[in-house]
Length: 386
Ligand code: FEO
Image (cartoon, rainbow, N blue to C red; front, side, top):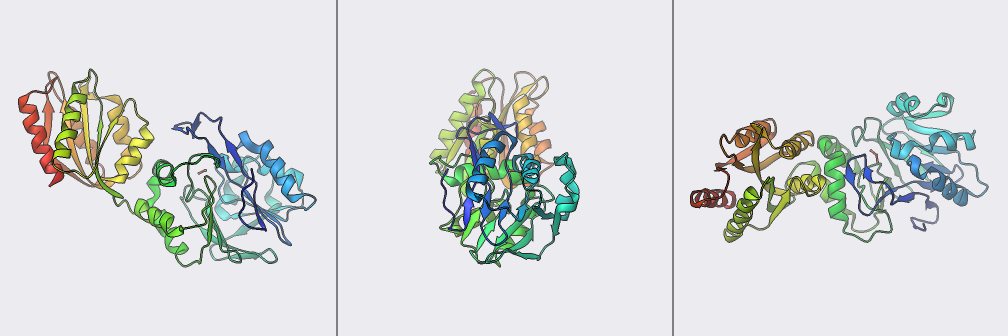
């Protein structure tokens, strides 16, 4: 795949359109890319490797770009297997090649290879730099974006930020799709828990003059970088990105669904900026999580099930907690034919999250929507839009 970064920085990554679920949980209808780069210089450097599914294609790309040049370094910015599966094979192929990585990565490396590479490591720390000839690598530690050993590298001659998983996106590189949508779904589901750590690295990046961002997944970003950096700033600070209301619901026999469709109508009558419905058992959970973070308000509507929460309602709430959901207004609609419990249980789980304001009234449906339910839905719609 011919992707141009510059005369001296070459793309050698691989598209994967055959993986069923990224990290064994996220659907990727347009695949994913495992990005890797080569900086050609007196000391030629390979920037990261790829997933095991892509190693043989990647080695072919590396050989094609290197021709007869022997790389001086392999840089490892992140050890997760989608980026580290080629370390062993490339180290065997180029026995003189050294490996640049953080101390934490050096400690973890033996878990990711059966080869003893300890005498080939160049361990770098925050603020260190390495001259390659006309290029210079400057290291910026980025712990927990998304693993503890992660580091970003700023190449100061061409002003390129190699950002590990940062600014990554689902979708192979030949996919023509909106960056924000799939980058947001990637961000909140993969990195979302680590907002404070992303904020910390953004502060360091703000001191750099960046012309290009090279992430480990998704497109190379060359224009309008403020747009992407601004999105990352909003997402990592847990601020809502847009005004709107996500209604995430479950409905066993269609009655709760009827109620939330009515609620949507009422919210729109009350001039809600945007109302999005998501079926927690049928729609992509990762997209629902993304929308929960995107909008400033959330309504969860769920039946009671075995005197507890409906399973995918509980899954949704636990995912939200896991990803550090916070700072939002939340309305509750519960359903129960003889002993409605889901409202109480949803509030308990929401109570474990930070800065969640429950908007009253909680609406209770006893099996199906009646006139009195509609009156309560009207009250909730009003409270959610005032
Ligand atoms: Fe793309 Fe955290 O690995």
